[in-house]
Length: 262
Image 1 (cartoon, rainbow, N blue to C red):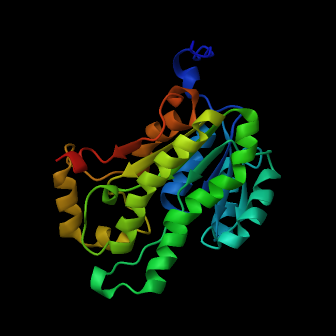
Image 2: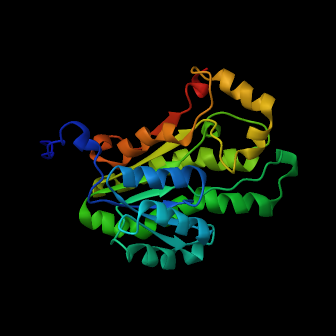
């Protein structure tokens, strides 16, 4: 059977241009999500930001401009609320064709101390929400024949760290989830990949940042001798969102300066 014809790739930096695309970014009120929302607009796309803290979302719209950014107040861990969240997200710019699942939480406890309720709370946000958020926008992506799903993994996707039982279980699950989404939705023209960050200063990692010795040890383990800043992930993000990454799917992209390779 002959290969289907493929449209020519835009030349040079045009392959990374997100003009004409709309992204939904969850967890966009702080940290990685906030940084990713800004990167998408900088690359020419429109962004709808979803998070719980409305004041911070309003600040971001002020920074990015209402012609480029909008928001919806949402708790993606409340799975029953996702259809309403999706309906609100479609209103400003139309159906998002890029979904970036950043929203996260954690419980820092050893395996013997983790309760079922604590475990479930992390699972709902870190593992279930990425699927069920993306499901809301799959029909429109399928109809368009183009879509991008970017999930957030972690170095704990493949490496054990102390006190991360719930978090690591979910981030390991993100790898399997991402591959399954890529497999099922690939025929619809949709790619699914995960960015796996190393150590970056965010609200979620603040306890690690505050431990100066541990923070430095983490930096020393990288090949570049430093921990990351969120802008270090922008290149991977825009590639995966754009035509530049159109033949990448089902992949875990580690952005960790070699931490997991050392």
